[in-house]
Every structure is written in C-alpha cells, then in structure tokens.
Figure 1 (cartoon, rainbow, N blue to C red):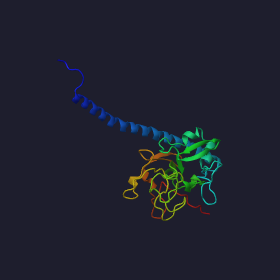
Figure 2 (cartoon, rainbow, N blue to C red):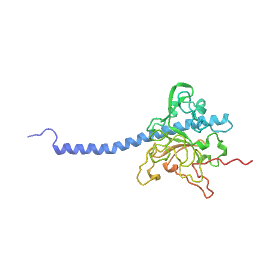
Figure 3 (cartoon, rainbow, N blue to C red):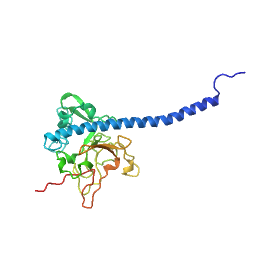
Length: 260
C-alpha cells in the first residue's frame, strides 16, 4: 500500500533544515543591513564635509561654532527650547536635505538631539552627529595632523537618561558634544577618556574597558576628519592617549596656541 504525506521523522528533518537556513540567513541579512547603513552614514558625513568646506572658504578657514552657549556654558536655546548648534552655520551650504544628512540610519534613538530646522522653524530635525567641541571655531590650519583628527562622529546626546552623565560611559549612550571625563570641553593633564561620543551601550561588568564599547555600526564609529575625509574607526578611540610630552595623540588633536 502506498503511503501519502510525510513521516514524522521527515517533518522533523525538514524543520531542522529550515532552522539551520534561518540561522545562516538572519546574521547575513543583519550584516547586509549594517553595510548599507554604514555606507549611507558615510555618505551623510561626506555631504556634511562638503558644506563645511564651503563654510570655511567664506570664513577664512575657520570651522563653525560647535554650539552657541550661555554665560554659564550651557547650550543656548532657540524659541522652541532647542539647542543652537554647528548645523546653523553650515545649513546654507548643504546641497541635500538636512533631515536626511543629519540622521544616521543606524542611530538607535533616531536622532536623540532635536534641533529646529534653520530655514523652516516648523520642522524638527533629529541630529545623530556630534562636533568635537575643542575644535569649535578653530582653523583647520592650526591642527598639526588634520587628517588624523576627528571633527564629527556618530553620537547620541546626553546619555541613556537624557542628561549629561557625570560619570561618563558608566551607563552607555553618551554623545553629541564631545568632552572629557575631567574637563568641560577641553582636556586637562588628568584626562583619561572622551566623556561623550558615539558609544551607546556598555556592559557594566569588569569596569571601563574598551572591549565593552559599542558603536552604531558593527565595524565601529563613523567619523569625519578635520581634513574632510571620512572613515570607520574602532570604538576604542574614546580612550585618550598622550605622547611623552603630555600632548593628546590622534584622533583627539587640539590646536596649539599660536606664538606671537
């Protein structure tokens, strides 16, 4: 007598095969998504670099202000209570839609910093990129190694709790205005690491270790260097290193005072 249908063993074999295929395809799909998001993010940074270059040409080679501050150092806010940032300076030089180029597609919070569109007060923009504050308003020509110095990077504002964390990196999700663990936007001799960058998750066990750091992208942190080129760097860049003279090593260069 001919049997019809599959036996229980055959069904189990087919189910197992499907599971194996899914275990292979899902990570592959995630990798492809990350590759696409990384490419789109780098494209955003290139657009920002073009706008910055045009800005510098009109302002004697100077970079825009990282953010506009009140007398107490806190970010100045517009009529809507949103910060006035470097975007205000370059908006007129951007050739593509600001809403697109300011938002990293891999940003887990979809632009945690909210700013008002400089040319449309009714539009709110999500900002995924942080400006390295020590270079605010400085000239690129003042940098010893602009090609090795990070100017803008993937960033999440404020921290997981939505505020500037007094203990940087302890709870993850630090970003936007990059600063140091022991100084306000400028390094000191005791600085150990950058307080806020593109790191958005950290495991708490074993203390602060570069191996615990996570970035928006699987390969690392997308950055725009001061000379205009973009790259993806390992999340370990948040740790400060100094040369024998005590000066910060790349990628966190600070312009030397000009000699009179």
